[in-house]
Image 1 (spheres, rainbow over the protein chains, first blue to last red):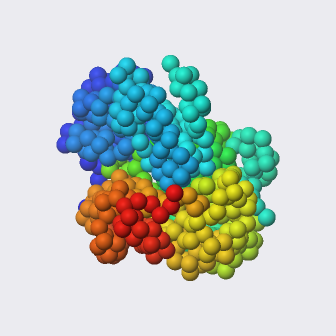
Image 2: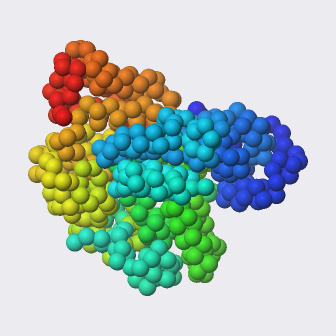
Image 3: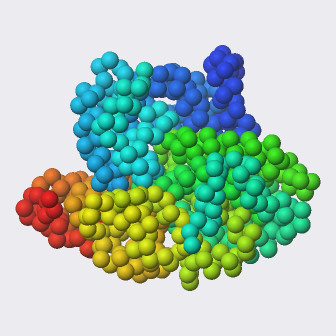
Length: 176
Length: 422
């Protein structure tokens, strides 16, 4: 890495950006682009990937990543790098609800092993798998910064803390 | 004396609202600075006098960091807040964002004024959706009330502030990885020098500070650097947020003066759970070497006392372990974390963290070899200090700490293929 910082832009900015995403999605991505210097559209790549992922049932495809690259004037490889580096991006289909269980130290010593075991049994999946009906994916994650409420998990944008089997039942049974 | 700085509004109803913040004099420090046209040097000197040290974990003096920026260099400069809280055991910045976002905003605008920056970013970890929404709502309120934008209160000073959401990577808490991440790349740390003060975000002079550090600024300038410094002890000025978790009754975040005895902090957190006995404490996030419980009960919570005991205060994340814990299992989990989170850039860390995890895993699962502990000792010295960023050190230090204080548990595991505990 040198000390020169330039965007990893493609040689030629892509035209017809309007055709890449619908107007609502474009407006949301554009809100992020507007936060950064004009020549740094690529700063919006994480936000754009997250929005596109949400709109695609929780995971990214090569085609979608290519569209993000074109929209932000980036080389596709630069977008793949980002999508494969950060843990919140999914490159394979996931269940409707992604249950992200923290098993790091504070959660572990407060019984996250039992939480994982309970979830595996209840959902009939192992960590890293998606239930047969496609409703749930169970994912082990690193510290989510809520150790005061250990053991905890995240579903969608929401944290659930001080988990017990009873609480898990009521949370999961409340999801559509 | 608790809750004097970042948590001083915790007794309020919905303290995150602008009207609540202003009811206690919020943003008056900023407007005072702008109206008086206070000199940036005097602000930086006040921060220096406060003894504030970086609250993200490294403990670098904040005022000194600010003074590295040459204010008169033409061109854009940036203020970046590191809210990528991810050091296992740490959950304090989440509460600053949720409960006192305006104090952080005010601190960032003041920082911008002091270094001559007109733009700032707050990098919030992607999982922190609720804190992000709180912060965004506070930004809107601040903008509408004229605390952000162009020509603030007729002073000629502009400042715009945005949040940037991460997407899941511990390494982005490393300041240059965070800058790379804002630039839309993989979060891989940069070589230093040049430091961000000269070559930061988009190659421009940048200061990057932790959430708690920046949120402390308005209070420091309101009450004076000396006042803040006097809250703490020698070399550890001020109060600090401690996130305490583990086998304790009431885990949570407590703001207490630096230098407070650990025993008092433990008492505030309700003491040990279910009458269990304390075995060990990880005093500053999982990268900090473990300290045996008995020794910890004699220590005070400040940078020097914890350093003298062979560990570090880090981010103030205190993980308390009781006697039911097998230290091999605890270390195995921590090592897995560094293996998982290594960015893969430097060979000693990319390969070494995997080795550490695999060797500790085989000890934990009854396949340990007599020579494994010497192997671990050796490996840690070949990772620490040999990488671009501190993640290598962070992976090595907990191993060294555990082997220093709990070696017999590892030996027992290897010899008997099972735990000494339970």
